[in-house]
Image 1 (tube, rainbow over the protein chains, first blue to last red):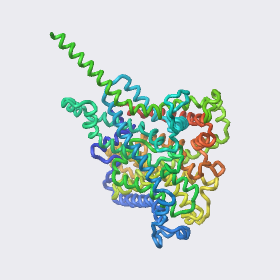
Image 2: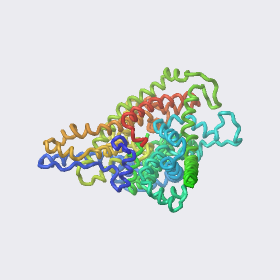
Image 3: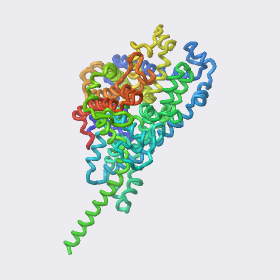
Image 4: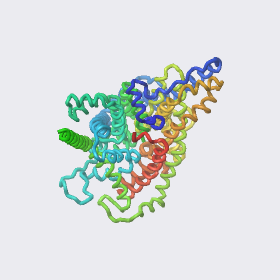
Length: 321
Length: 300
């Protein structure tokens, strides 16, 4: 059904459903009868691993260290361990520089978008996978086609629609009340409420579930919605988890749409807050690093808690822009 | 009698089908309403307004392909395009090489594989804003990198070094994601191929170049297309580093950044939409090539 070489897409989620590691790779076996060469290879591999790990970790270690310093200490030298570790920078960033507000904004928007996607994409995905209705293929092709289109194409029209919602470019005066959703949470949430990747992932996953479950539910007299809600959703756990993580991370880290839509400091997301902080107070290093750490920590916690779903979701959906 | 039963059955079968169709529409109407309003309609609409001289107050004049012609002669757009192409030419091979290296190393039989894999993926977790903030700190005149090199280069505020610095930080950030794709691709290589190579006495270096690398071809292509598309759309890093200007001296201006400026600061919506359409044409073409060669999986 799915050409696995061509598309890591659903393959990784399927592996996940079977309880396997979604991107473990297949470790190359021991090479028999090559003792000396083998040891040398091992040493080389570990040396490479350590070098790479250092390369990836040092910047983060450094930013955490700096976030615990005072401003004078931060420009004095390069001690990794702060003389007098202090949380002052965090306190200042969260209160004076409003990052507590930005974090709450980001959390609210990311959670709302995630919940909307979970419900709407699983509902639509189920119908596209299982219910027969005229026009189903055409409609689904339309969804698929947008996966090949850069998000920036909808930038100007979306901006127009949101600044005068519902859009009035056709000179229709219905409804007569219009809202400017630029500078509000709602504009950001609305335009991401249904993401094509998620709809696609959910449909593909529902296709892999055997039909027996639904037939059993039908015999028990369950209606369509009940079958979806009580039978299919509980079976789609891995896909729902991947959608949750992918969407939450995408929204939490989003910059482009946040910048375009959240043009109001009250609703700034963490990323827009950081960008504006950089513009104004570039060299308050401890504060800047504290703000960065604040924006990275929640995603790190999510990653540690659900690494398998994370990796499956990323392999399934492609690199973020 | 028998005919009546058969007809009754066909009737109820027919009404069950109709019912299923209605339920189907009921299920997809809400998701598709959002989807058409905020994806399909805007995308079509963008192409429509790209043929107008369109400002905040609406269509001023239908000007055919004038916007496209202007784009062709717009020095700033061409500068942005050149920057993006240079950026793509360096970042794509960079992140592929580093990602492949990390994948192959993590794929060995070693202790702590999950740890190393997580470590290499870690930068991909953070937002572009946080990564840029960290690099602005590390690369500042009195920063760590300058201290190590014994120099005092102003990496982000010199027009010679700003773009290369951004390339470096992006390669560093995204290689973890590329590693994941390569790991998934490595999984599809059957182990007996390696065993055969080992019996033939092929060393690890030779095995990699003669067997692993060529067998990864679908993986290479997938990563290549996805990386190129990601690079062509680059915006966040340049916006944050330059405060939205694309400076110093337009050295970090990109196509999307110029489009943003045209729409948000200059309020020339029709012209900004034109840039979106051009970007779309290029990316759509690339994706189409990929789908035609490798993409039978989408419609199962």
